Length: 464
Image (cartoon, rainbow, N blue to C red):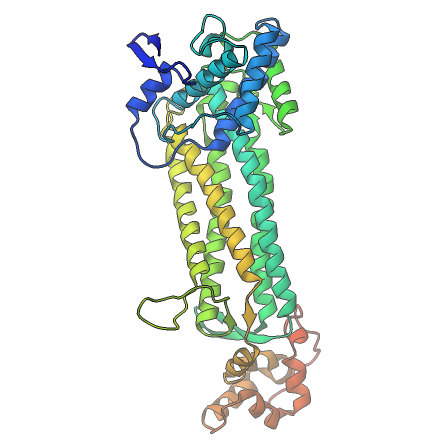
């Protein structure tokens, strides 16, 4: 066993335990159930520690052999090879200090092991004096969070592209199938099922573009600003070199904040990105609801995946659609939580960055999951042409397509006549009254989906 000390007293740890007394305090203070600190965030913090050690080595503040050991320890965390369970709760006081301290301690003790020294030999490599040199939680944690967000946004962008492609495939597959367009869930005017899926694809395309552009809103970081953004305790050369080194090491387009005090104190950049994500959540919910409704009325068939009832044999539920809706709802509500966290920060820090960070990283994960499962599901959707066309031709709504030819008054007369007749197929009724050439021409999918018409003269009631 080894004994470590802080100004609250001492703690006993086993000789090979990688964390130290600061982590012991955090474990005792936050015995919480629920989410733990994101592995993506932990790896990003380790990347910062690696780059900081190398810059400090270049500037002569840390000896080369220590830099090498710290770098190796950080790489083991980044590569997921270190034998340590980072299970601190995501929700913690201190704006992420416990997470930063834990990683400082783990890297320091692992570096000591690499050099053949005992854990806790802090006179040689110290968690704060060496690993955390020229840093503060207040510039490390938000910088790492933004790095993790950028990477997750890229994954979400790819997932959105896959979903857009799935909808576009169905757009082409269904482009000649006529169906009824609806407003207020009431029959409106004819359209094609392909155009319905095209509208889904367009919405996701906007989401994909927003996520791609969202990276620009989150790339400015405050690393080098230390406690409140003034750079206190850090040499000027380090402040300018650390961002360059971090950018080169990670390949991320990170930029140093022009006003690091602002970047440290204000979290509106996260709010802006969460708004982009909320728009994606809203689109996914709306699209999923539309698919569920079209499936319910039989115009499309969703893939059948599992039994839907423990009491009703043969019942199958739209489980993927319902899951997407739930993921979207959770993400949308995460956005509201992120807004609250950003608003509650005080003066030179945002104390609630751990909750904000967990919420935005989880939000991206949920939306990525939703897009991934939905894109696979969409590829299995079948359009029931006979049901679509039967429902379409049994309503009087298709008369709207003939207005440029016969005019409103004549159309109204025909609708009244059909409603008092025994005919059940309005298209056949129109063919009997107007001829097949006019009706088939105007209710052709390509004609219906053309942007406007080119008819020069509307035939009057008397003419027709």
